[in-house]
Image (cartoon, rainbow, N blue to C red):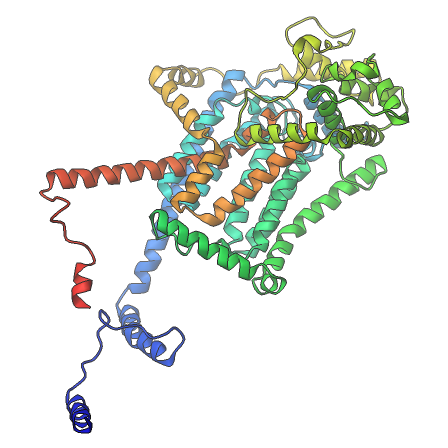
Length: 623
């Protein structure tokens, strides 16, 4: 036995050991000196060769410059197409604005800022859009057609946000599809013709989210995070629902980028999805600690993002302190909307008490036992009475309504939670046909109380709301102001009329163009939850999808908890919704085309399933 072992050792020593080849070399454990030496021997010659190859770095720089040039060309072309589409829409209305009660409140605040004849009232309306109208009036000397033109200009930029998000999710092709779907969907929206805050808010929200996605990932940019904070802070200054989006952005930034990345996105199928899920869950369980957050600089990124938001919030508090004597943010319509929810939409009786009696005294001629059958707009009559006759201000009225409605919610939480779930689901599904969830049948609801001077016409409700929208002015002055604003808004713009816009509107009415626009509107309005699930399943940029999912859910819960309608909150997501829908449609179509090509190759290329050679056969032979 000893002799045999000696002979074996002598034979092994005399046999030359061949140098290991990369194909059949078994890797050493990660981190060992042998593994580091093997990696260096394998990669350093290749790196040196690429570095010494003439023009290697120049070629890469040229390719990057070509990509930037192609993206810039796409943006210019998309912006031109979108601007033409918005100009056609603008010419159809002739620049004439549609006035509502909100419009009158924005205009009064803008004129107060411009001319100083009265103080602006930011207690119930956020100051963002009023500041925007004041800037438009200062630059162009007009707040009628000029404001409408500014709204259309903001809408014309939205396809750029959809294109950039589509490129970030998948490719330039997805970006182009997203831009086209956004242009098609914007044709059915009436934001541009209304002096309302939706156009400004959607612009700030879309580009703020885009800057957050670009600046919050691996190798993110501090300047982009600060820009995102500025844009989303201005969006919050315009509408309070941006609070949920800002909260989602903070949570997303605190989660380390290594958890949000999709390193295993190359694995396909069910097994690949399981691997991705287990890997992400393992990283998340190990990284969500205070030390990991500090190490991953999540707190620093969230601080950079939140700093502009805090500054804008302090700016709003300063505005209210200067004009109303209250250093606080705008209360908005939270108390009034909650009162609408419990009285009109849920049929919840109000609790007994002194404050309830005070609130019912402000409400128009409704008794406590049947208060819930009142009209949904009666709360605005109560607001008008409180400010004119009750000696209250906006803050005190909203706080009173919030306290009374809050106690009603506490007494019957199940009804409130059920209506919140229904409203949030309707908002997530973008259902415009079921915007309200009142169990009170129409025959039991009280009719609308009109102002005595309101005209008897089809738009009487809108006119009525406008008449009651200015309780800080005397009645005659408020009516005269509303009529003056309506007369000014009825003036046509000095441009955008006649040819070629009339010819363009005629071309849009052609069956082929109209059909393509309808198809684009339908595809772009795919349920964003379904599109998100599809993008997650297909392995598209999981960091971006995670942020959008968090923003969607938190905003839907906020809208469901406070709002009485969802139709004004749904379409502000038009750019992100179309980008997700375009990604899903593009990937599904690409997969179908790839599968059909494989079937054609198998059927007509002389191959069959039995004689195809597996891809791994040469590797198995080498091993």
